[in-house]
Image 1 (cartoon, rainbow, N blue to C red):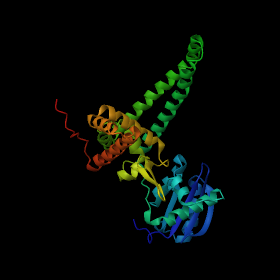
Image 2 (image 1 turned 90 degrees about the vertical axis):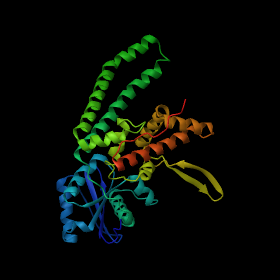
Image 3 (image 1 turned 90 degrees about the horizontal axis):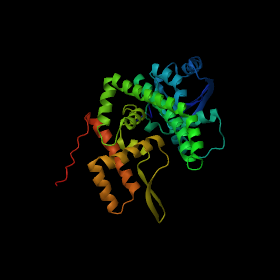
Image 4 (image 1 turned 135 degrees about the vertical axis):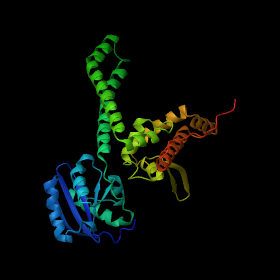
Length: 338
């Protein structure tokens, strides 16, 4: 996307819970910086200054900010209403591209974000507003993760200590948190039901889930995370980019005469990567095609984790191919003749 002539002002925004730091850059030169409250009143105050600068023509401005979760919501909602061009970038991407810095404060960070947008203006990836149903699904998924984490925090110490204390002490410890575990498990079931209801309530979303979960190994948990992170495949449309984002693409490791084995990058969405790993494990056990592929590669001497990573990539490619065609996955794998 050629935006070299479309945007004149590049506005970096450092977002925190209570404040927003705006830095306005033109031709890589900082015009001004301002700090306002992270609410509608503060945002409107900044826009009055911006209006004086560009005669109210917001179409010539590109706003760039980092992913900070719900703290972005007031600004993104305002910018969406104004039909502004917005680029929401991963914090690690901005940090890695800007080199070493000895100064760290909100003003400096806002300027860095603005200059990042100017420097990479040819590769801008505009943000797409998430539908309310996706926002709701995102909140429920986050709630589910917290409940599962709480259950894990209670269960693991009980299981580990059981081997080192008397049976009486173990029963006493388990009894002490039985009501808490039962309540959490009840809440977990309630959240799972709510997630399914949200999916069924929206025909387009329900159809998308039907397509994604038609692929072996992909259940509702994996499908939910993929759909949320891609914003219904609007923000990420290329399977290779998503595979890179999920950390399942091996990259070359070489320097001079040294040639190392390709390795996956540590810079990734660890949650998506973990879920894709579970999907690959499930597929390698329950899909005849993937099970045959896994056994064949392992018998050839390939590392098991390498083979599983290949399956993760295959799953990603199939998800995007099916979504692009708007069709469920059809297994054309021929059954072995007995």
